[in-house]
Length: 259
Ligand SMILES: Nc1ncnc2c1ncn2[C@@H]1O[C@H](COP(=O)(O)OP(=O)(O)OP(=O)(O)O)[C@@H](O)[C@H]1O
Image 1 (tube, helix red, strand yellow):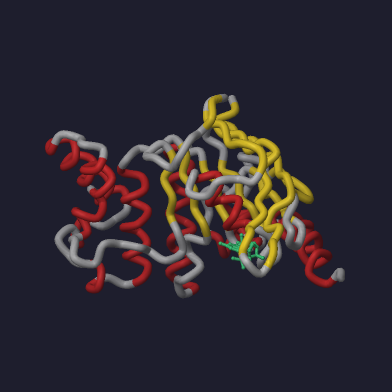
Image 2 (cartoon, protein in one colour):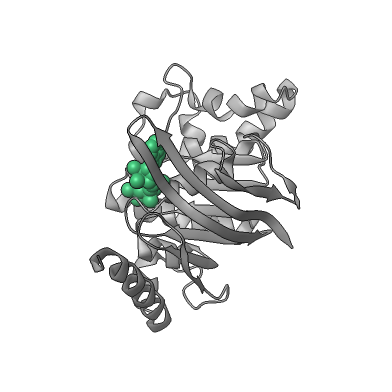
């Protein structure tokens, strides 16, 4: 069942100095419970596509549908996690996680219950009353993910969520997100520069051309791939994993070196 449909979406930025075509018309459907990742050369329009999918930017043409209806402006049905954690510095971890719940006007008890659920899920229980500056980057990004999940979004949009983290923290969070996905089956649109991360986490990888971006190829990753549930280091040794990685890399490389 299609959850989100990006239909003929393009974007041209207009400024006084001229026009930038960021995105050629793109079509992309995401099924309920599917994890779809977009990769492509720098500047190909990945973030632009994400902002439009989130309702934070208007497309120049085309439309975004959720459950077959126009998705409209940003709202709690679509939660976004950005590379920079964007936490509220003067609020505690629990208050940050509860932000969207307060905005939605949920009763206090329900807020508390959902905050507790997220603290547990993301391994943040002992940091409940800490402030963001007291946490490492990895912990801050856990809070950002918990905040996004607390509103129980129908679609989770993640734009390079691990891009600002050190390699070890990144590995741990990749494994956490993989676990969450296997347990809870979110509908996810994910952006990354890491081909390995894309193959590890996704059901489908979308490769974009160099800017102005268009969708070049879709590569399906079997849900029952042998590396599901193992750590990313081990996954990297699987021949099918290596093959998928190579196929995607070749496509991206072709876009970077061709002029
Ligand atoms: N607000 C804006 N105004 C004008 N041009 C923009 C704006 N946002 C993005 N662009 C341009 O649109 C193109 C696509 O940018 P976008 O950030 O979507 O690419 P990206 O694939 O996410 O890049 P990266 O991988 O480097 O993060 C680029 O040429 C960029 O300069």
